[in-house]
Length: 199
Image (cartoon, rainbow, N blue to C red; front, top):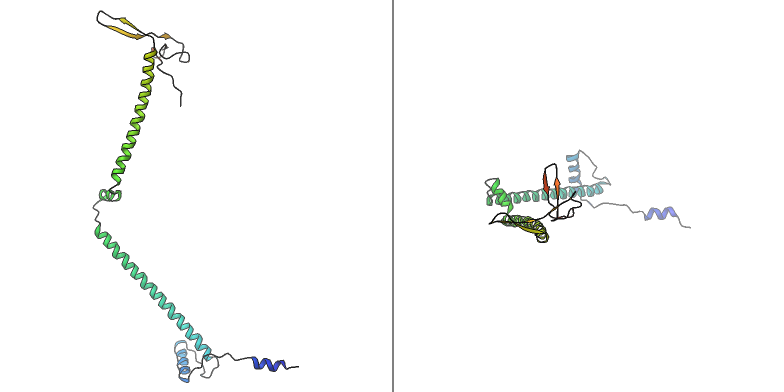
């Protein structure tokens, strides 16, 4: 049987840091004493490991500081560029009032588009009105064409053409062009011209 304790002792290796010269050890210890008030023995076994950790921290701090300085420089340049372009834009456009600002914002195509839209709306309303008047006119023309018209002389030079209407109790029983309804409240005669469905 082998001796386990003997093999384990020989397989263990000592972790060491970089080999430092005596001058590097003195400089490093002096820096620690000066900056942090930490005094170390030059022959301390952990000194190479501390040196490595310290150098890594210094590199990290330097990189971080350079990155933040680069970022600040980029932001300053961006601010300058935006300010320069903004000043150029302000110099090229001089707005003298709200009316001019409106027309600049409205653009050269806004007014013609607005005029076309207004003309389209007016044309649509005119068409609708014309169709309504035409529809009513058609009803009246139909009534006149199909009603029983008669002619009677008024005097030697004038005659009148009229439609003979008969009384009706209400509009439910009346026929357009043939009946009339007497309205006692207004004391007038109401003649139905045409009937249409309610919408």
